[in-house]
Length: 340
Ligand code: UT7
Image (cartoon, rainbow, N blue to C red; front, top):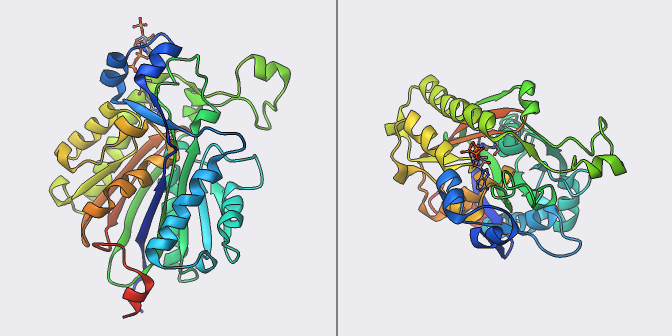
């Protein structure tokens, strides 16, 4: 029997219209454009404005885009996994809400919580469903409305995060394209440096948790930065090594966009020139689970069949890892093309 791999066959994305620029942040908190740019590489981030809008409302256009490009109806989707730390509600899963909104009435779905590594964790999970032979069309979403959990009086976090969503479609392939290997890790001891304390079963919402600002992101930047530089770079390097590859075999590094300096360190560790690194942090900031699929969305037209991509992430948990993908198409094929 031929080995089934899970290949990406379509990419979609969505970023809200409103641009929260460094200049606007200068009017809100004690910061400046030069500090933000030199320490993070960020120039602006997108913010989802409007009453009644949530993470699912960004994921929906991303999912509809992948269906349109691939020429499929949402009813053909078997499973939907939504990586997010900003679900619409604690339950039901945002994936279920997205399925309902796009009309994916034949899909089952669930959310996956792994912060900035969420998309990689979901991609590997979804790839396993395809590789098992039981599922033919699995949608992986990375989406976060970070503005819902950011304290806009805290200059150490509010300059970093933005809102956005990306999605990909996974389908079976027997020609050796798609998700080749993944090296994923987590370490719960990292929770002390990056978390949101309130709103879970440990600290349910009370007037006190609100007064103590426990429903916002808490981050100790320095220890997170150090762990990110070390672990994201090492995961990418180790994954290449165990696949007998070097940076020279890689066409693109697709890194989580948390800090331009972390991205540079990862590229340098695997010996990749910066021209081969997808970087859009200056435009979107850190959209948590959204960063990697949004890179694929921005670069899709430049990707070629057979390109080797290394996806790498580090985030809250701590969680981190890298995934090796052999790109499967030059331009998004429609279902009619693949039948021909
Ligand atoms: O994606 C999830 C994982 N998260 C990450 O990977 C983020 C990792 N951490 C980082 O990217 C960086 O640590 C930050 C961007 C958050 C902070 O950069 P840093 O170079 O580590 O700065 P720092 O925290 O060491 O602060 C340096 C100085 C401090 O002032 P003093 O104590 O030296 O006088 C801060 O108070 O910069 C000050 N500072 C600011 N100044 C202007 C902190 N935030 C700001 C700000 N504007 N927004």
